[in-house]
Length: 226
Image (cartoon, rainbow, N blue to C red):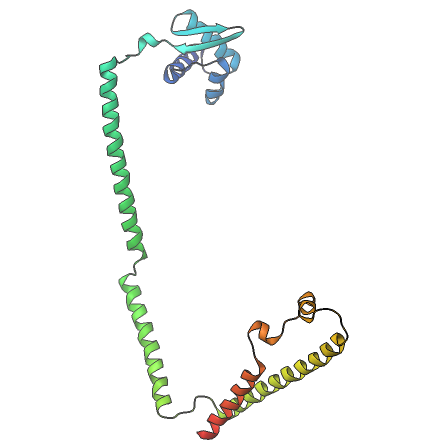
């Protein structure tokens, strides 16, 4: 339900005075939609307020611009303006100080929140003590000559490792035979041809078959020595 005419006038007049800037009827209508006022009613009210001298207006062609009467406002003189600017500067400085203080407090809060509570410290201490105890028990077993890996498990791992080394060696030999046969009478530069096909040797990726073979032999020698 739309407000009564006198109520509409009070709403529009209050808005124009609050804004204290040039407005047209569309500006006012858009801003006062929450009061369920139609543009035609607002236009009529603005004209009525202007005719009664409660607001000022100017015409620019077919457009009417409305403005709050300036004689109702206390306009400060130069001395008052200077005083207001000085007061504003002080308030701004105070605001900056408050913002800085707030930032520092927020930083302290964040730091405190990141710290462990007493309960969490006790839980972590218990967990670390347990881990230390487990490592100490393991160290005692190692010092006492206890074998942590069963012989059959070690043998199975070595057999699998040996099988993989054999496969590696066999495939390396197969590739060399094929590569030599393909490139025997090739006029191309072998390095460029290899790069063109995207082929990488073991050495290109930082591995060496011999070093892996020696690792297996070294492990067997250590086992015999023990």
